[in-house]
Image (cartoon, rainbow, N blue to C red):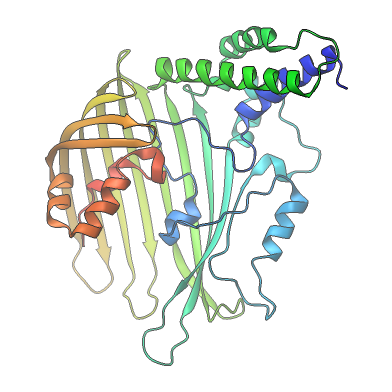
Amino acid sequence: MISRSSLAAGVLAAALLLMGFPASGEEKPPEFLTAVPESPAFSFLATTPAEVARPGSARDFALALINGVGPDGNAVNGFAVEATLWRLIPRMRVPLEAYQSSRIKYLLANTQLSLGTVAREGAGEGDPGATDLALGIKLTFFDRGDPMADRAFTEELGEALLPCLPASPEPDEEEQKASLACVEKAIEARWADHTREHWNGARLSLALAAGRRLEEGDFSRDENNGFRVWLTGGVPLSRSGMGLAQATYRDQPEIAGVPASSSLSIGARALFGSPGLNGFIEAVAEQISMDGGEDQSHTLWSVGADIRIADNLWVSAGLGRRFESLLEADEEARTAVLASLKWGITAQSRLSSLQPTR
């Protein structure tokens, strides 16, 4: 049996740690203004893996990497792994106090690695094709909307969890289940309240991804497949508004007969309202350079409104090139775009949808 004092300490510690550093497979509370990919490697590969390994230790990470190599020594297609950096460093700990007071520990705890592969079809009959491999990293330098970085929030949460402790010093299984259910309910309610009050908190994030193309999946027959960078910052505009700025850069070398190219886009968005309903105006400028071709530039804008109708389900309406593109696209493309209009679903920037279809 678990003693009352042991359970009290365990409940509080587990609750705080799980909220600050989600365990494998645990869904994070919604982040309303995600502006860089949560998994840059998968965004680079333009794929959404059906299964993603999320190792919680250096040993598990090594085992996951081994699973990415087939019996023939070649890369396995459809391989995907994500990991939090600090969990891969032996004996590394990020206690709550350090998470809230140390910028380095905060950065370390919020640095995410991603690695994945995807198959590419051959150019013609008899061509076995290739495997694209990408490695990505996402860094969150600060996020004022992060509840676990708020000392007042964690102190209030700790007090709120005390009534969840079992009445008996040695609770039975049913009492323990009831205690944990109480903890979950308290966390959910207070996290939602904090998110509602701090949805427009200042933040700064950076993501990078680089890729290699492996002929027939052979690691010894590889070539550069380019890299991408995403940088986004946000600041509050009064209590009910927020401004976002984003810069993205893509470098694509000549590969598979496709000429080399690079692009730089810089965008801004201002929105006013609440976490569930807001109006916005946004614009993005993009410069595209093609080897052996003319440079292209685009300046686009959109204005409209977003309404959340259910968890992770939003409706967006407005005027501008982004919405014109939806009307021009075929039904399958419209469905795909509509499914990704909310930042948190695909973890891609809303600004990226402003870029012209080519």
